[in-house]
Length: 143
Image (cartoon, rainbow, N blue to C red):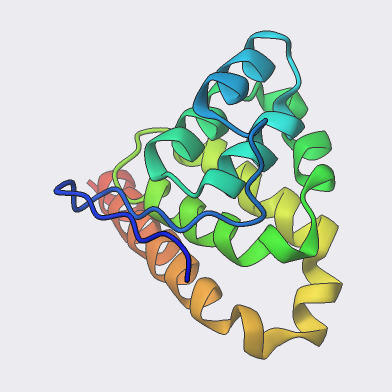
């Protein structure tokens, strides 16, 4: 009844969603090269590989973030928030990730508010990371 995939790599959690033969890491990279950042993000979210999603997020130009966030369907919002939280933990690109968060909340905030139970875990993870980065930056500015 299905296929189970095991890996020795703890960072790799293979839990694909709506996977087809056309959704491959190569196709994600191809879409990135073509400037189809929204499609690349959706494909990487389908593959559910952290390194691939992080690559797409970080390769998306700042001015394209809004359009890419609008292309994300409601079924991927929780995963995207979790990936953003994980990426932001150790990234020096604080403003860049905060822009992703801002666009996500402006675009999908009302829907997520109406379905807050489904997104509570993701929001808490994101809040913890943003709060942590705030404390770090505040300490630097206060010195």
